[in-house]
Picture 1 (cartoon, rainbow, N blue to C red):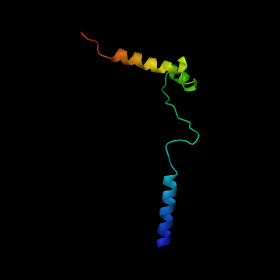
Picture 2: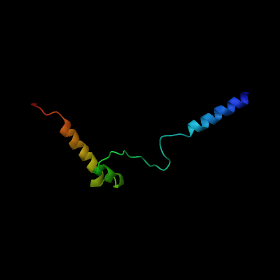
Picture 3: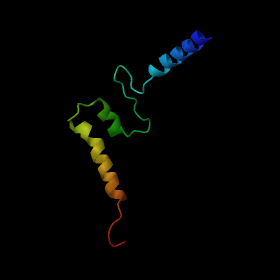
Picture 4: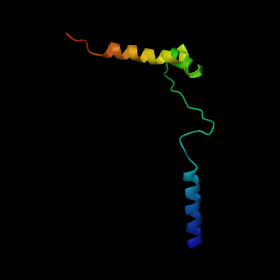
Length: 71
């Protein structure tokens, strides 16, 4: 009986310990609702204008949402 329960515990730990959120290949799933600038930035090199465009797009959106003084 002890061996059976020990075997079940080892099987359980083996399955739980093998599960992680990160994929071994380094692939990162992207959200489906991304803008066209965001989708282009996925494939652009890190410091190209295409990679920086989504950040600029987000900043413009945040500036449009900020309350303006005097209203």
